[in-house]
Image 1 (cartoon, rainbow, N blue to C red):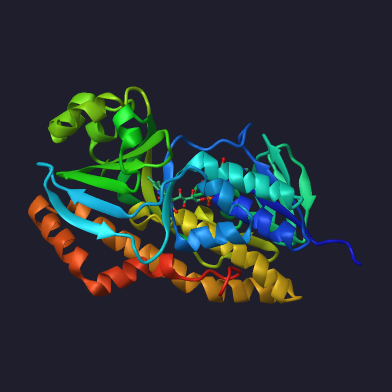
Image 2: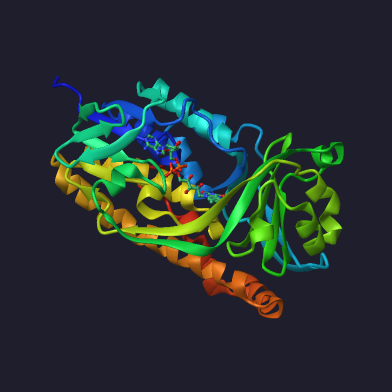
Amino acid sequence: MGKPRHAEIAGAGFAGLTAACALARRGWSVRVHERAEALRTMGAGIYIYENGLRVLEAVGAYDAAVAGAPRAHTREVRDERDRVIAVHRWDVARVFSIVRQNVINALVAAARDAGADIVTGSEAVAADPAGALVLADGRRLAADLVVAADGANSKVRDSLALATRRKPLADGAIRLLLDKTEAERKGDGGVTVEHWSGTRRILYTPCSETDIYIALTMLDADAAGKATPIDQGAWVRSFPHLAALIGRIGERGRYDRFELIKLKRWSAGRVAVIGDAAHALPPNIGQGGGCAMMNALSLAVHLDRHDDLAAALAAWERRERPLTEHTQRISVFLGWPTTWPPVLRRMFFAAAGRSKWLTRQRTRTALHRPTGTRGE
Ligand code: FAD
């Protein structure tokens, strides 16, 4: 038996950890470099749809990831007077709302079980297409495959000048977790509510037996809306009926502006770029993490199918890029109403809820059977 092929991965997020699991399970020796001192992600929730759940199953992380998370079944959209303006039912496929840290913990455990080494406090700064990852401490680590999974601000990607488009979008979000009240613990964990008022939105999502995930979204130009700690007065003025909920937020929350990233190619020589580093998108259909995990698993599958690395990377991109670009287009499109007057927005949501065509476009990614998963 020859020496196993070796991969150096930058970034221990959804993309890097999924790639680590998938490669290690296929016999690769794998080392992941995480810049942070601990394998901790931000305090927030995440929706993971059927496609992402299938990937978690395929890499051995599903049971631990969804433990204690509610299966979401209904999303209500409400206006500034708390009237329901649309109701979406998730009845054709699974979707869970989960505490992010639980998914990361599950992927870390699955990666280690498969034999991957994860090093914290290790920052990558560049990659050499000939096959090396360069660290901030000056070390140059040779590898058969280098994976840039270091997120939207990827230094590794930028060292290869692969980005053709990096567009900050008009809106962003403050995300946080709240402890459930007694009443919330007894409530239906599968119902999420999207409250709109002007260009501001409060997304309320139960995401474990003890946590509620809150996302406040607003225009990036809305200085009072995007301030952290949140400007309680400004938010209560927009949502007087949610004053008690807003009052629970206190000092919590981190603001991130949405952005869109496209690359010339997803690889250069022996370096593959995955996740937000390759294709960040706004979260309007909750598929950034889903695409990151699908493309990470598919990368390992294609490297297994082809002896020649260049041929594997080309086949991988040819296979996965069209769906990722569809997901980016539909996510950007569903963000447009944010800047529209309330009347138009209400009409849009009502029509969107009834449109079979739009529902098909919106759910295409969720219903896709990812490469390397059961029944694909
Ligand atoms: P990241 O999660 O950013 O992970 C990158 C990792 O690399 C981090 O651990 C970071 O510390 C590390 N790192 C960074 N630089 C370096 C370096 N130089 N060297 C070493 N390590 C480095 N997606 C969904 O699927 N469902 C949702 O419901 C959803 N909701 C969202 C809501 C909001 C408001 C936003 C902004 C995004 C949302 N997303 C959602 C998108 C999702 O969060 C991202 O697509 C996903 O986190 C991308 O994973 P990643 O591993 O590519 O990058």
